[in-house]
Amino acid sequence: MKRIITFGIVFLILGPAIIFANSPPKLVEGHAKPAVATSGTLIVYQVTYIDEEGDAPEYVRLIFTGIAAEDMRKLSGNYKTGAVYEFSWKQNDSIDYRFEASDGEMTAKLPWYGGTLAPVNIISEKLESNRIYFFSRQNSEPLWSYDLGKSQVQNTVISDDGSSIAVKTNDYIYFFSKDSNNPLWKHPCETGAEDPSGGSGWVDISADGGYIAGGCRESLNLFSKSGKLLWTYRDNIGIYAVSISADGEHLAAGTSFSDELIFFSRKSNKPIWKYQATSDVHGLSLSSDGNLVAAGSHSPEERAYLFSKDSNNPLTAHKTSPDSPVWTAAMSRDGKYSVYGLDSSDTYNSIFLFSNDKNTPLKTWTTDWWVRSVDISSNGKYIVAGSGDHNVYLIDRDKDEPLWKFESGERVGSVSISQDGNYIAAGSKDKKVYLFSRESKIPSWDYNADSWVDSVAISANGEYIVAGTGAANYMSEGHHPIFNPEKRLEIEGNGTGTGEKNWSGAGENLGAETEISEKETTCGDGICEGTEAYESCPRDCCGENCESPEDVPEGKNDSKKEEVKPEKEKGLFGKIIGFFGRLFGR
Image 1 (cartoon, one colour):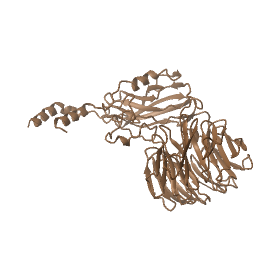
Image 2 (spheres, rainbow, N blue to C red; image 1 turned 90 degrees about the vertical axis):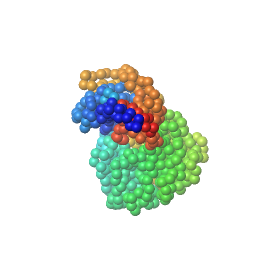
Image 3 (tube, rainbow, N blue to C red; image 1 turned 180 degrees about the vertical axis):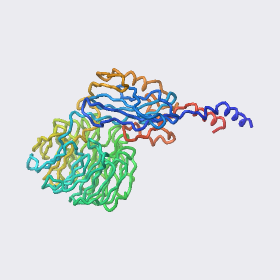
């Protein structure tokens, strides 16, 4: 009876506060446009603020990591259903960013888990003269080329005998014969769904050219050589990587929205199995008979995977590094070896070779920056890698040091090796296609293209090479003190509508950022704020599902997960609930 009386008294006192308890605000649909730009372009950042009570925000801020924190101005809408806020400036470098807002009592962040959003890719030149090139090994002059204009190549593949070529651009899947630059057919990807840089989707081809697997952002498509669409698997999952077995019987897709690896039979668009990762699935390669699948995952997983076609339980799930995505993978035709390349940000092991009967690396090699392309000969003896350190590496499986490395004029985004390991093709940001023989690091020939060469493929017999230009393998690179140093920022902003601000360097407006991010914090107080993030304080930065912190990605840099989960501050309502819990022993 005493507890009931106490409850009644407390309810009379605090009842109005319970009824009128404040709901946290939300931030949704944060983005920057354009996603790819040249230096000095005006970049427009927007985010939508929502408050259930219709409370105006105390602030809505755009926070550039280590650079500045800027108040955003209201553009349109209302607070209850969604008010759009905007900030714009001219920038000449890629900068990680996030959004933060407060209604005066509670705060919201985007991303909600404490990470940052993918930066705008600032490129050094407009890539408006892109082409597909087709070569014979005997001559550095193309047999033919195909003009893409502003459209960019994502990747190129070629059948074993070089007679059939498939190419994925940011808006089409193309199929060519080696005899003509007129496409035999092309398939449009979803209108408006593709990244302008060509940064989504992929294509692969069976050994005889009879089947083509093509990924658009929202669909995986299987075609016959004639261009007949055999089936489509469609979902808003962000198809990134695609691979088909040499015999054409099995195929797989890695996704960037749903973080899945999905495995199919050629006979049906119903998946045989799915594997749920916690990061984008980037690298992907199937064995010739489709019995094995090699895959690599982005941060924060950074795992080299190997699967059997019979199960989604990994045979191998090796953690390769503390912070570098496994960007690329390749498997030998005999199915005995898999090689993985890391998108490394520093000098350490970036090439991993596995014997497929073991779940730890057989060998590793070091480069001085990222490796975004690897390939391997049919017997696994020879490995080729292209690196951001400007080098093409040729490696003998049995040796600790590369057989040779060739330094190009810029980053090397794509490499390919013939099945006997005798010939190597490479493409570089220096706008050149290179051909090498195994015996020498001196190119047999090189060809000057009109733009960055971001994809090459050589036929299994080494007779033909296809190459394409674009920026896909040169995006979101991060900074490197030698190969991509951080620029001094010359930035003009008009985010508050009060006139232009000119900043030189990266520190002039850092005080505001520091004030927000370095204020005193206490891990365990239920508030994710300041320097706290999931990695340093999962108890506070686990979002709404704090009973399952393992489900939250550790600071993943990802702009596509737009749902915003407000921080769980212990406001008045939370304190009342806690009081009643203690009062009644719960």
